[in-house]
Amino acid sequence: MKFGAIIIGDEILSGKRQDKHMAKVIESLSARGLELSWGHYLGDDRELITATIKRVLGMPDVVFSFGGIGATPDDHTRQCAAAAAGVALKLHPDAEREIRARFMDDPKGVTPQRLEMGTFPLGSTIIPNPFNRIPGFNYGNIYFLPGFPQMAWPMMQWVLDTHYSHLFDAHRIGEAAIIVREAGESLLIDLMQAVQGKYPQLKIFSLPRVQPERFIELGARGDPAQVAAAMVELKDGVSAMKFPWTDAPKFGAT
Image (tube, rainbow, N blue to C red; front, side, top):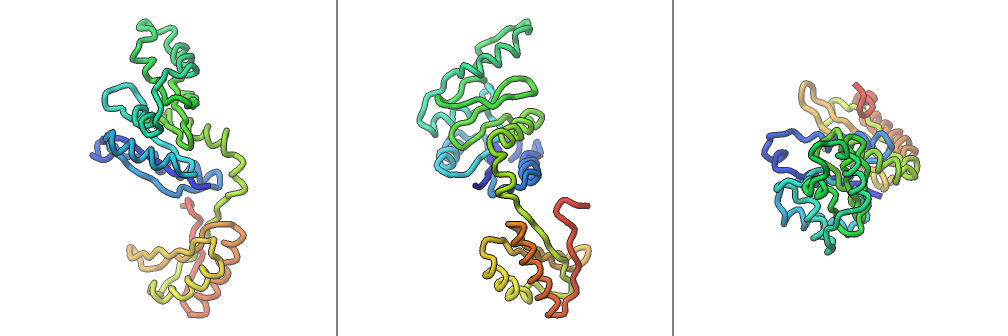
């Protein structure tokens, strides 16, 4: 099973705000032994959002969509999701209960604009929001979350821990690498192809670096047991070519 992310908002593409969702998705998945397979950034364009959701709804991937589920004129995601699915928008009863509970003691009361935030594509289920009780929603394989990190991130983690905990061990991803010096990347291609051919389920990678010093990070990513075996062959191959190498820091280490 693969995971994807869609991040929506003109403010991200214009540079008014720096996106933090993509890094958080990667971090949250990695902490559970999973990984992000793809990501898309979209502006507040109804046609583009609708087309993207329609395409993604036909995929087997689990997808997190961030942004555009509010009730202001520049929030289009709820409407686009309904259009992509070919269903109507309707006030969800569970969302209505959450919204009414949230604003029960508010002097302004429960306004139509506030209830609009609980209007989701028919057939959706809600995603609880621990920050302010205004829920997100799930339709098919897509989980639609707010654009605000303090709301969206705990909601995303709730989805993972509630619905996908069975994947945490079965799909755990391992990664290891070595730092190779005095070698051009082209000199390692034959070795990489040989190891990749022996372990086709792994990703054998090389990441050249030129500043502040020149070296190549050579490694493998995938099933932890296969990664360990592949790394033995990569190390032996580099040693046979008489290039010096050292173990690379683990991903995320300082």
